[in-house]
Length: 362
Image (cartoon, rainbow, N blue to C red; front, side):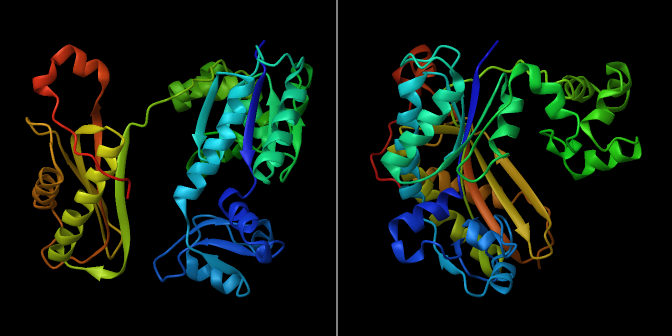
């Protein structure tokens, strides 16, 4: 039986800003850019009372919460605080699976400091986070990742909720099926049409019935309705891609997009060089003024070896889109993936590994 903790920082970006600016404590804080095309990155709990939430258009957030303070996000600062928090996690277990800067799974089945129960470990971690970073975290404790993630949301903010093995069925049955990870609006509609509104309703279907309707996903639904989740905590997952994209203040022409892509290619190359990463595959993303989105990608025979290389490939990919010539664009981005790693370098030899340019993360 595993002992899993899911830690989720409370309104992380906004809480960091309130911590660093005492005059903002207890007031509605909205992290994001207050522009026509911007979205909210995070909202303090004071702002959430007005209906503001992450991914909401900034203009709507301003209407809902006119007294809110907008703060431009500082991701370097948030990454540093996240690093501090992960150091706390690693005092207790090497099995830490970060999901984002502000949340992670921990497998504390074998806890490093000798704390006997997962509940005590979770409370200790929350206390250490509060003491060392002056921020609050919520925790969910359960026999698996699926249940722990649900539990961490149960007593937010600054709470801890425990689901013990003998409590699983009683806890799950009344829940709305939307609480199941992977059940979005489209799946919820299908389930509703099948007469399924709660986990108890889902529990009444056999695995064969769910597989017949959902394929392999049906097996997963059947398991989760019974609180079954065998997925392990996987530490130190490598990031598969890096990209830079921007929503423009006004729609721009393809020529202007090309200028932007060339500039961002140089910045992206510098940032990846600092991380000692070289990608084989280049991707360009475009979104038109009427919200049509497409991507084009290329894995050239020669691995990009400079920002100029990356910019050239990005410009070439722009010629491969099928949008009408008169189109205007609200968003563009460039990214790299399919990274050369150390194992490749050992196998292929130094001739096939391009030199990395030193630089600073921008």
